[in-house]
Amino acid sequence: MKNVLFVVDEKQMGGVSVLLEDILKRINLSKYNIDIMVLHNNGDYLDNLPSEVNLIYGSSFFDVVDLSICEVLKTKKINKILKKIYLVFLMKTGLIKNKIVKERRKCVHKKYDVEIAFKDGFTALFTAYGDSKCKYHWLHTDYSMYDCTAKYRKLFNKTFNYFDKIIGISKSVVYKFQEKYPNTNLEVIYNLIDTSKIKKMALEKEVNFDPNVINLVSVGRIHDMKGYDRLVRVFERLNKNGKLDNVYLRIVGDGPDYNLVKSLIKEFSLEDKVEMVGRVKNPFPYVKNSDAFLMCSRYEPFGLVILEAMVLETPVISTEVASIHEIMNENYGLITENSEEGLYQAISKAIENKDILNKYKNNLKDYKYDTDEIIKNIENLLDEV
Image (cartoon, rainbow, N blue to C red; front, side, top):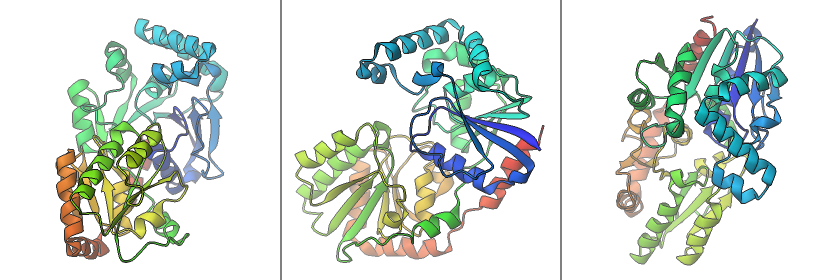
């Protein structure tokens, strides 16, 4: 059995954690001894792992790797602030390599055949400077829109050369990454979703939606990149133009912009049209029972939630983000210009003619996503050593 280590920075709600859980539930665990290194024990995802998978945690040095300088300053904790300053100094000077080698001795107590930096950014440094036989880095980010390595370009330019292969979750993600870091060995493996689990979870809870209105839903982390602030502004405009008499939107999720979005709903007097549901463990009943799923992201490398919606036969209205044309076409929903105006026009079109949504819903009855091929690609990757 091969020893495999996946490295993530935290356990927060998000597509990366969901994806990792789904991968580990689908691959043949009889072939591998799998550990997950969580550098900073922040968040409560990754708690539904198979019993064969072990969680281990980084040393206290890594407590601030997933926090921005602004977030650390807001804590007003001197110890954390000094840790962050020290971390930035090490990365700017390139001394981070020696520090990671030292810190790994405190928390890594096994030799690994394969080690995977499973999140963009710092996990690449942690894996690159380790002594595992084979090293992979998984890209989840559209580097043309958000480059978490930009401040440390020289450091990461060297770091990426340590990897045997770099995996991107879409062709678009790979292309955008190569624009920043050419001459790297890249491969595409699309995101996995557990379709049977999603369908089962969608039936676990009854939701009482008014059948006389058009029920819209959006699920995601309430963060600037997800564009919920502009979605609320679009709904204000729709409301002013008398287009929301028969419409109700639920936003499911939590995140740093939660209070901002909630305050905008109140400011625009949309409380009877837009509901902040908050974070729920199982959002799928909300998705399944809605007439359409909205993705309003400013940038999005893949859009896992879009696949989940389509599996549940819920039509999608999405802004044009990196890989949208790779994962859906306009038989299943509307792809619109990535702007407030684009969202306004697409949502208007859907709510003014519900037959369009019914057509998409009917088309989705034949939708299938090839998860078996993705699992095969992942296992082939792990077996290359």
